[in-house]
Length: 159
Image 1 (cartoon, rainbow, N blue to C red):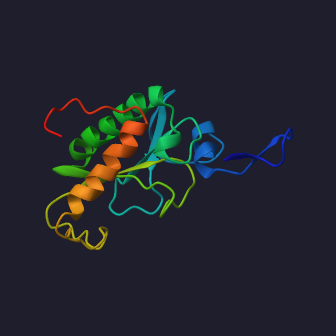
Image 2 (image 1 turned 90 degrees about the vertical axis):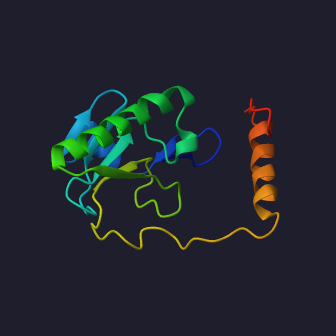
């Protein structure tokens, strides 16, 4: 991640293992690589075939990825999610992404994990909660307000 040390100084570049993989400086089992993303096997997989998809541009979280790069990045995630069931004989995949919290490497990455019914994956999700009376409407309104202030419009007339 680049951070200026003081005004007018050169940015400090922290080592990034994913940038090293993208640049070919670190070894990885790469399954897809192009100008938009690199996909490689996770070194500590949940199941064999667990793949990480990273944008070639160093960004820490999804909101840092330029909007014109989001579609191409997620198309690569989609391609990997389509390939794993065919390649590994699994009926589906689990796709997940952390932003800052629980992000072991500070470089945006999507996990694409092959899944099958009864595979034993448990505890990966947080405990579920229920909304109290009126709480869901209030939370949704706050989110809509932030999106609206960011210039995102909802064209549904039922809101």
